[in-house]
Length: 255
Image 1 (cartoon, rainbow, N blue to C red):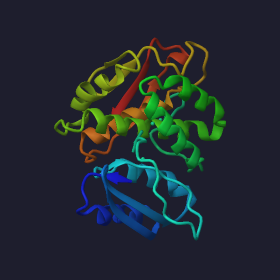
Image 2: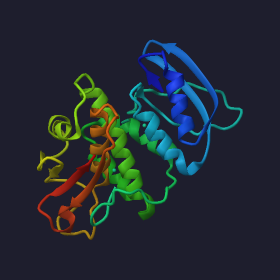
Image 3: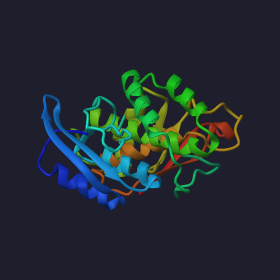
Image 4: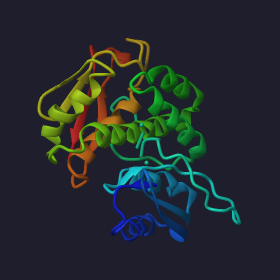
């Protein structure tokens, strides 16, 4: 992980590790020209790994994050810190459920590698994202794409909006989410707690049977959480989709 400040970093991130059900086995804190580098080795349940990575990567003190598999006995080597935090990436169904289903194990080494490439390509990310989406099996696709959206959304917020004041979700929808989406798609606020995307690349009009824009659900969720200073409980679900006949994909924000 890369951070701007040393004070309180290990304490706060250690608490995040423990609260996610993991134990901290080793750590190393060093200074570098880029900032403060913190490397952690943790042990815990595989099923909770995705939640831990999201918690660490979107933490307010973390500027950049990378997770790699660590074999016992291996040295704590430095890693690349240019990728979006557990930051540089969604979920679905006919009315996309807010509640999480059973945890799905993802290939996090592969996802971290793809996030670095997505950061380099941004905002021209859809060719790579669509290829990734096709490569995931049906069980993991929604979880993986939503996670990618969360990571990229948090990264975009920290890159482009972090100097602004913290906002309530309804205000962040207009002043953060819509501007952040403009380089990607045609988006507009819809009422006080919804957003419309007219040209989502993840669907073909009328050709689907369920909402499929998992990436944007995660992207919006991360943006709005970051904009609130991670103080608001924000959930985003897709309630209408062009793929199943609507004229636009609609995302409702619940906080």
